[in-house]
Length: 185
Image (tube, rainbow, N blue to C red; front, side, top):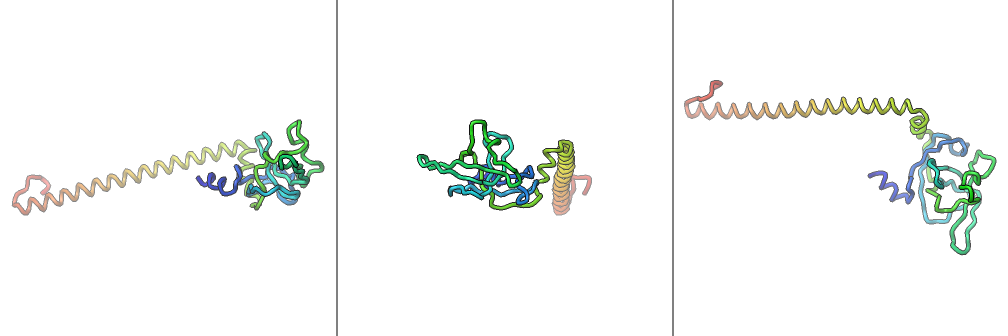
């Protein structure tokens, strides 16, 4: 629910992304989390964008050139990682020399340093992911067992209180009438 709200507010299908490589150092380091926003303003050289042209992993790089097509008013974009020697043409699909604006997923508007390492470790070290998964399952089992115990204890307590109340009421009623039909009176 929160994720869908962020998507609506930011206009980006992925409002948060983790920097997975050192290609944007020194500005952004591996493990930084970037917050994205996708406005309708034209993209300009110098902006940091996240793009994905059919890859599983989005790429975070800086726009170094923008060429606007006069006939359609769409922009062709050239990107490059700050720490890379060459532009990103080798990263685009084989027939492309420029990135089309439709592949841009968002512009970086803020970041949290190193917080994304949790995601990186979970992805790169499957053993840790399995370990955390088991820990979570054990935690949920304990929590469920404890909740089940408390719920049943509560139910039994309520039933016991009702029975005691009924017995007390029955005792008072029979004392008023002078006879008792129950052996506990």
